[in-house]
Length: 429
Length: 121
Image (cartoon, rainbow over all chains, first blue to last red; front, top):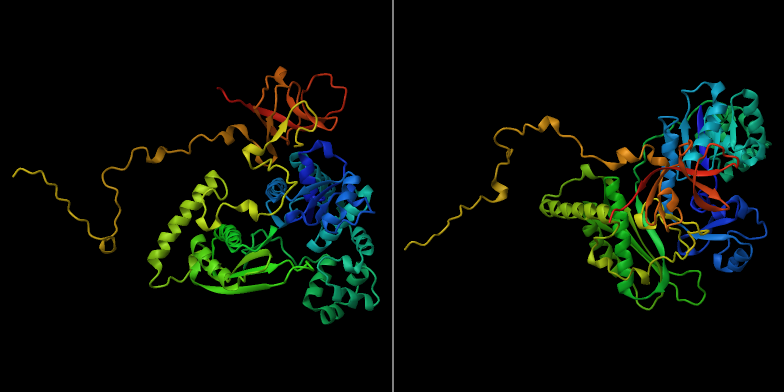
């Protein structure tokens, strides 16, 4: 049996762990640059008259009148709490697949079917106790069924965030409750095709002849069909997948036309992605740079461009990547525009230990590799970006994201720890 | 002429040298006895994924021996026993309490305080 454990309004819950004054209060988390709401807790979603997914500046007054507390996204905090949740789940099973930042599949085949209801509650209670994060648990024979069970666990209040499909009648009941479009992994087109065949819910779909399914919605559909009929087709995948491309693109806090500042931001992003590249022990063969003005603006002149450059040899060195990226940036930059966004993508990634040595450059490469190692070592000891290339510059404030309401990084920075005193709400600044 | 002149013998350039192990003489008698150095995490943190650190902002809790700037190590996974210090939530704010024998009110426990780190200056 497989459990899908899913954190409830994860980002908002993370913020609430360290803010007891926000218990049972509406909390929302904003996207990079505080542009729009990307997560809202139950209490915030209940405020039905607020159009939650509008740009924040349009609904700012409405939010504050309803006492909705806004946070800028604090991904450092969220990823640490996510890790704590996943590690807690590993106490229950050696096989845990981290499906996303707030969702994991957990293999429970070593438990007896009769125990699972109790185990499900134990998982939920332990994660909440150890980390402060509330989760929902759906358990079933296959991944697809556990996903539906998890949705149902949260949908009906009396389920108490737990639903275990441990009998055939429960499976049929669950599928009967699930609409076609809510089946995990079914596309819009396929959902319409199934509905046009007269099927209204997942149970009716699961009872269709398999030949029809394979013919009309391909092998993907057949796999789903089998999963819904208790035949596991998807394994728990514990290997972290090595990414085939790594990229980052963030809007500037302000619109920029100064080439120097854009160059600094670009260098900074290269150093970020190069870091990720080295963490997964890959090297890039190509680098893409792109630049954009704000296409939402009606008054600004519009321009955007991108360029892909090939590196002399596959590399993960920040120095080599930055050099190449800045050559590209120079080529696509045009004066006289107010730019909103710059980004870099590393493409054609290959494992670092399988790089073809180029005959003439190898000496230089080893040198650059040891410089990179020293920089990484210093930064891991003294903090991110303490040692950086001069091209990154010192003017981060002039281009960096606006994060007006970011909470402290309570779990990763000594100087941002949660503080307590007898005065109320000590964390409010 | 009694000039003391030192003649350095030039090493061959790196590219032409045959690499060989540089160790000579007896191997260290400590080879089989080395151990990793003491790590505070090992002694102070038994459940890393449930352990949090909290700084005390003022002298409000001095009656528990907790002073301004102390750092509390808190294990959320533990269930508090008698006479243990806990971080509790009271009236929507954090507070430090001692678990007494006769506890009538139901407490909202955030975590059990396991160690207090103090700077001695």
